[in-house]
Amino acid sequence: MDKTRDFYDSWATRQMHDKSRDTVLKWKAVNFLNLLLRNNLNQLDNVCEIGGAEGILLNTLDHVIAIQSLSNYDISSVFCEAGKKLFPKIHFNNYDFIDSPSYHDLALLSDITEHVENDREFLFSVSKHCKYLLIKIPIEKAFINSAFFYAIRLKKKPEELRYGINHTNGHLRGYSICHASKFISEYYQILDHEISDVAYFNPSKKKRILKRIFGKRIFILIYGGAYFALCRSLNA
Image (tube, rainbow, N blue to C red; front, side, top):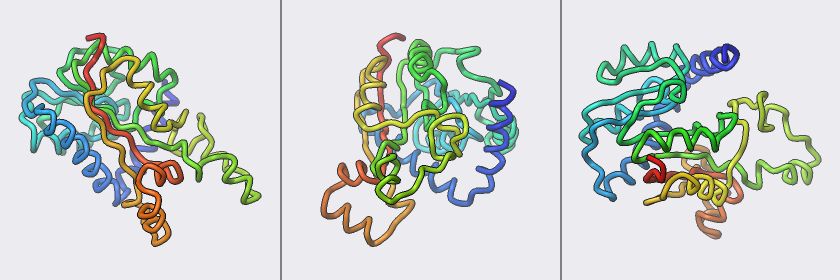
């Protein structure tokens, strides 16, 4: 656990100096808010985020949805200390949610399960302690990330892009759209979902043309994307 904390404290320090990060978090918030609002979940008593960094996503939701209590669980002390200064309404817990779970009306998981050693055990535990879940999973099992893509270019996939402890972002696994949906459905009823490409963050003329010709779904199979879902627990 100490090594994990050290990794994420180091990662948090790098992230907080990334100028594009605020835009990405607001993009996530817009997708989450769309799911909540079109399903009439606009008043909630108790909302938490697991691995919510310094709380930007939670704070953005709080500006639109009526939320009485906000809690954030993050193992990085760097993020928690920064968040306490930025967002005093949010209660910061500098430990793993699973170590001391509380019950919440809604939990947020944004780019978390790919970091967890046993993602199924983790999601099952969360499902017992929250009625609703908003989850975002990166869709990285795409053509440009495949071993075949590197092989046809006569290159070896860089070690830091291989899933495992040496991955540059600490990702232990990747998901496809189908994999993400089936994984969530083991413990939740998916009430609504949104599938997004990420061309906005890495645009090019070639990508715009491919997206226009093949459509979003095929584009995501080539370049990857993001899966957002609003779910109701089957175990709470």
